[in-house]
Image 1 (cartoon, helix red, strand yellow):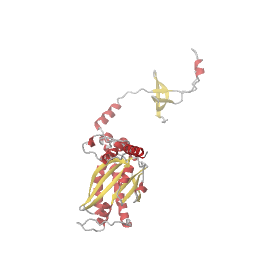
Image 2 (image 1 turned 120 degrees about the vertical axis):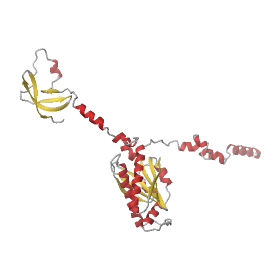
Image 3 (image 1 turned 135 degrees about the horizontal axis):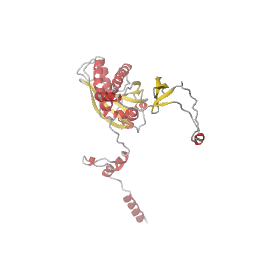
Image 4 (image 1 turned 180 degrees about the vertical axis):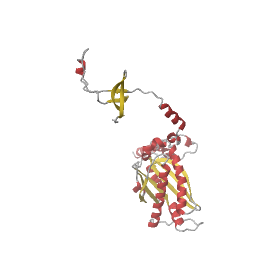
Length: 333
């Protein structure tokens, strides 16, 4: 009887054997080579990434960010009184929750509001950028890296400096959007905990523009996060390939159109009187029936083009023609 029990346990152990490391990696989607990257991922990795959406490109937004880095380089150079270079590292689309989870602490997160869009965005600065800017403004020497003090909160001086820099970025961002649309960005608050800077659902898509700021031997990174929902009011403008799609003018065509309009023939009609008649009354009309209009020769008549009233006037006679004397423009309905 004991031998039979041992055989049963051995068979169950074979049925429920443990997975080796290769099988676990294959299940999770890890451990594939560069050649395998060209093929579709399998296992849980494919399931987890199956909900990723391919978002459309916004060419005009890339031009806006290109204008931003040029404006920001000049503004920060004037603010810091030092040589400042700003470069655009990348423009990415990702989930908001994915970006929040990727932040390294400590970091400062500035929440701003797009007034006309009635939505929010974020500006994040890493600690290297914060300490470098504080070091430059407070007289740090060149050739030495900015001192980074761990384990303490940011001082009021550091926070005020960052607020001023955020205001500079928002002003330049508003100017960068001017060729596309008029928009104002207002500073809302500063946060040090990413969870308190939630401006949209974690699963919603955002655009992340990563800027790199270099001040000779110092510098850091600035991330600009704008949800796709914030850009929805101007999406039609941002999908354009070039500025001319909206702002281009053909002066020759405008002058030709204007000259041809003066030679255009239009049909106008003079309406003496309008009244409402019931269908039952119209059905009773016969040849020789009279329809009273209840007007006098001095009453005004209307001159219309289609259904658009143009002028008011009075009817008269000149030689053998019935004429209308124009008294003035008609009121728009």
